[in-house]
Amino acid sequence: MSADGLSRLAAGARVLAALLFAIAGARFATVSLALALDEPPAPPAKEVRQSPLDVLKKPKLRPTDGHLGAAPSVFIREHTTDLDAAVAPAASARIETVRVSVVVTAGPSRSLVYVRGRQVGKTPFVGEVVCVPGNPVKIEVVPPKGMPLSSERLCLAGATLRMGD
Image 1 (cartoon, rainbow, N blue to C red):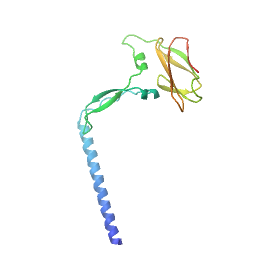
Image 2: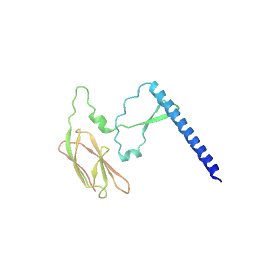
Image 3: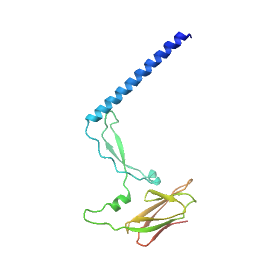
């Protein structure tokens, strides 16, 4: 192949690349304009803290409407935590909380420790948690290898929540 043929091939490739970029830009502009003219965006969803053991549970799914060529059957995952129900106060009531100690020695050393779905440290773990008296507190230990361990302890004022071998 000669130098003249290679230069024509290179020029054709540049034209094709420019055409593809123009098509992509037009598509983004069309979608942006359609979104700008549509109704205002919904407020951001509240942050969800997910425990590693939640992947073993079946999520609640609810259908939503498709939007701008999206699949007509889009599902949004809904998660509720025990903490949300425990700390959602009534309009005039105030919920009293207590601080309790947590001691976790279960599982192999350096396993991840989760309390109410939030990572708090590694085993062996000694710490404190704020909870509502009478409500359960879920403690999970996720070792680097093997099955996770899970336990629920009742929150009581002055108590120490222990999870050990």
